[in-house]
Amino acid sequence: METICIRIKIKQGALDDVRTWFQTLRERPNEVLQSLENEGVIIESVFLDSHGKDNYLIYYMKAENLSHARGIASKSILPIDEYHRKCLKSLCEERYNLEQLLDFDRI
Image (tube, rainbow, N blue to C red):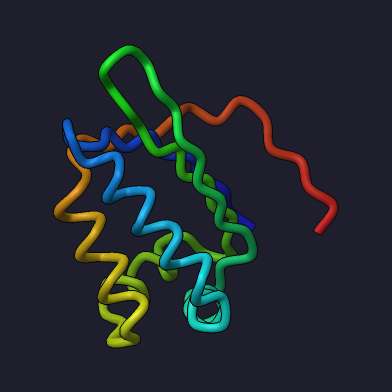
């Protein structure tokens, strides 16, 4: 099992669109769960982190194989994955991998 946490900067003025993006994902749980299954992702959580005028997504993922999961996600033709990639590209800027200091699970 592999784990990653990424901090992704949201473009200025895009916060409302980001909230709509994630509301859309919450409204389509069957599609999201199918996508995660295809990718071998066990857990995917996203949090909003705000500092002054800057907003970030904190993206946490646990998968059987992160490289495999990324490959499947980037090539998926599922409508939910195409929507997710489009939003990620249009609403987000810089990405930073956060340093993992500890990772325990009982899965």
